[in-house]
Length: 550
Image (cartoon, rainbow, N blue to C red):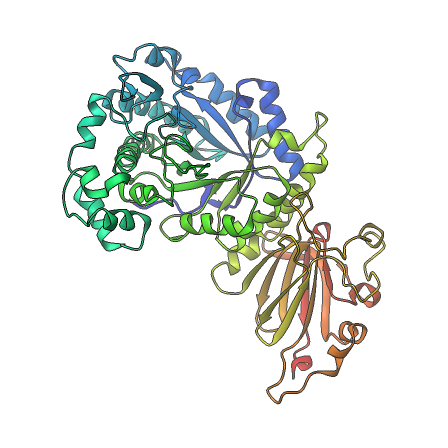
């Protein structure tokens, strides 16, 4: 099966930037309106909202189209795109959004059983009855979306379940179906995956258990076998649900993953067992099992840049086959800057901020906590044509400030580039009158997570032409050092270095489709002491003199 590799609306590609509403926001018109207004105020283009199984099918076999119709029409009126979140068999590792007629009939709709015979509040992924009921409802949902929206393109994707798995004090289902599958042979193609990639987490678990070429789950994977069994059957359950939906309407289908490992890192206790966690091998299992899911996605609340990079790398290590989409991030300050890393370095096709309503007030104004996100949303959307043109070519560079850091250096072909986050400490404030009064403190390096981090994109067009966008950053360019061991005289003085930068043009502007429109030309004082970047300057286009690098 060919997977969707990007989001589109009526054939037009979309870099999905926006927010996810809180879990109950879609259920009342006022709350849904608030969420749409929040995304619009922040400059996003997509809102993600739940559709729950219990409201869509309140009585078995009877589907209520009104909540879905109202939601699609509301989002369309705002000129936004919609990602529907199907809260059904699982929501954060439990069954809380299943209909009452499912919850009240555990004999027919089995739950995960505990070793003592008790039942967890989690549907069993080993039950065909559970799976088929969910799949019928999901197919009805996608058929309704097709009928309501195929000609409009408002809905660009559907998330199948939410952070699925077993969030209960077990790593597997101890019921009869679960025990049957736990003691059954591990599928050959999964063993082959572990054998082929011995350096992967799945391969490491297989090797540690003795590298058996056949056997049941504990025989092949040892202590990881219980979680591995849960992951395999969970992935197959959800893939069957996805297949039913795809048959009705072929939209991009996603699954999101609870990636935090908690204190002990124990499945069931600290995160839902069976979810596509990369560090345990479960992500490998999901990638082997599913055929109808287009994106397996991390929910990223990590504020540490190094940890954030590591987690994203696991999900984005095969961007051709598995596009990277981040359906949830925290709405704390660092996530506004880390969005640049996801889009620029990891090639993310979208990122949504959870609890988007928290970032605007009741009148629709952006709260101070929302301003960094509004800046990042705007900057990413401003350079979307450049991202599409240069991503993967080596000509796109991403810079994200880390706490305590002021300077980054990189080589841009014949040009040596220095990026200073904030003001240079050797010069006067060479900005226009709109900005010069606002950044007296900008010489400071950011030292904690409560401060807004600098970030920037640099796009190189040939040897001497550049596009910049960023916030709290200042770029300086000089010709690369010659091979004879000399040092250019202009570097001896900060004042001379910036005054001797051989620029032909520095201009601010924006894109209308693929065409750049100049809004302001920078010359004289405003062009000295580096190319300063603030979000409301939008795109800064710079052409250097080729003679200046000889």
